[in-house]
Figure 1 (tube, rainbow, N blue to C red):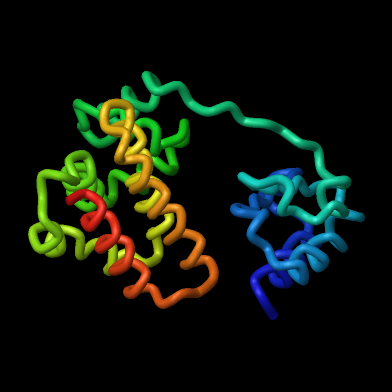
Figure 2 (figure 1 turned 45 degrees about the vertical axis):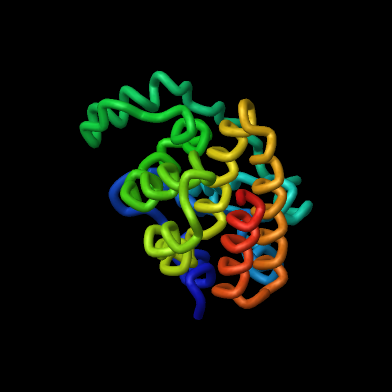
Length: 210
């Protein structure tokens, strides 16, 4: 029995403490087609005492049959000032860069995940905000995090792009680096060799910066 099957069995059980039960499914847009069809059976005839909340960042990834049975509630992005205040009170972070705020994308969850890897993001910002100031040999020891954090590589690459785009306002050549990052993202999605893809990205960026 998978987790979804287990949840569906629990849904049918009447609540004991209160009159209602609420189930929250995070990243519902990442469910497989099989999982979505399995959940559909419950959504078609849910018990009157149950509310099911599906959280998704990409609505189009949900099955049409699921979307048609749900009421859509949109959440606005949190204002930068509110996020900054939250981080000051929660983590004691007094200064947040504009690049970091863009990476947060109005989400407290993203902000907390990024700040958990603060040293990694700080190192990336230091290097990629002034590519021309370093040689490839100098940056390699400082970018080991790109090889060691495979599970968040798309977040890291997106952050690099945010930094490069900001620099491109005064240094047009940085646009070329962004194109290189985008190519690597596509290659990784096609299951290209991970380490070789990162190697190629760094070599190309510093080759073009000479």
